[in-house]
Length: 242
Length: 142
Image (cartoon, rainbow over all chains, first blue to last red; front, side, top):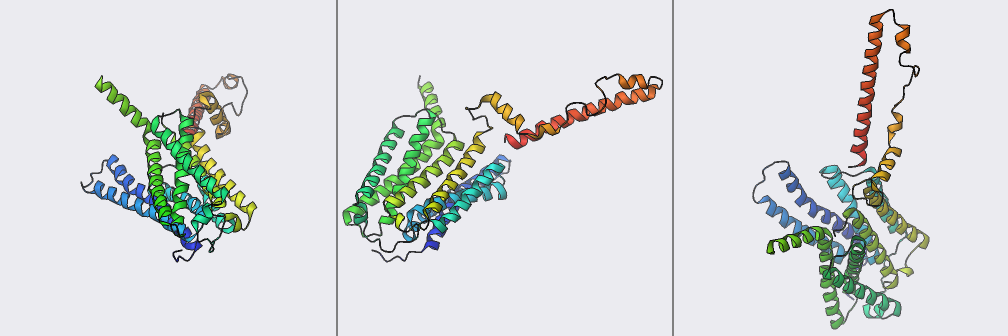
C-alpha cells in the first residue's frame, strides 16, 4: 500500500473544497452573464477568462473531492460533505453575496438541515480503517463482489437507455438517477482502490472504470440539462431538412 | 421530455448519498467503524429530509407543479396566506348603509363627509387587498 496516513480532517476539507470549487466554477460564468444582461459592456477577453476559470475550478474541484479526499478517509462521507458544501456555498454565493438567485425560507431551512446532518455524520459516522491494504481481498468477498458488479451493470444499462432515447419525465429521472448515482459511487470506489495494492490488470481496469464513470456522470448532467433544448433542436433540424 | 431541475437535483443528491453509504457498508466494511448505528441512520434520514425540503419548496406552488393543478394551488395559497388578517366585511356600524344618512339628514355637510369617508375607507380597503395579493405573490410564487 502506498503510504498515506489516514486523516479525517483532510478528507473532510478536500471534500468541502471540491463542493466550494464546483459552485465557484458556476459563479465565474454566471456573473459576467448577469452583468451583460444588465447592459454592462464587458471586455472581449472576459468571457474567455471566465470559461477558462470555470474549467480549471471544475478540474481542481473534481480532483480534490473525487480523488484525493477518498485517499484520506471513508468513501461514504465524501459525497455528503461534497453535496452539503455545494448547497451551502450555492446559498451563500448566489443568494447572499451575488444576489442572482432567490431562495425561499423552506429552501434555506432545507440547506441548513443538510449542513447540520453532515456535521453530525462526522460524529456518528465511520472512522478511518488503517488495516485495509488489499482491494482484491476486499472485493472478493461475495457481498462486495455482487454489489460492485451490480453497480457496474446498473451504470452500463442506464447509460445505454439514456443514449437510446428520451423517455417520459418519471422514467427519465429514474434512469438519470441510476446512471449518476452508480457512476459517482464507482468513481469514488476505484479512486480509493488505487492505493490498496491493486495488481497491474486490476489497476488498468480501475483506471478505465474511473474514466468511463466520469464520462457517464458528465454525460448524464448534459442530458439532464439539455434534453428539452436538444429535442427542440432535433425538431428544428428536421423541419429545415423537409 | 426535459427533466425538471427542482425535482431532479435534490433527488440526485439523496440517491448519491444513499448509494455511497450502502457501498461504504458493503465494500469498505464501514460497519466495523460506525460508532452509532442509530445516529448513522438518523443522519441519513436528516439528509433525505433536507433534500425533500429543497424539493417540496420548489414543487409546491410553481407552475411546474402538475400534481396539484390551478384550483388546488389557489386554495393552498388562500389557506396559507395572511389574507384573513385583512377585514373584508364592515368592521363597525350596521348592515343598513343608509342608517347614518337618516341621522344626519339635517346637516348636508356631515352627510357628504360620511360618504366621502366611506369612499376613502373603501379605497384604502381595496389598496390593502391589492397590497395583500401583491405581497402574497411576491413571497410565495417566486
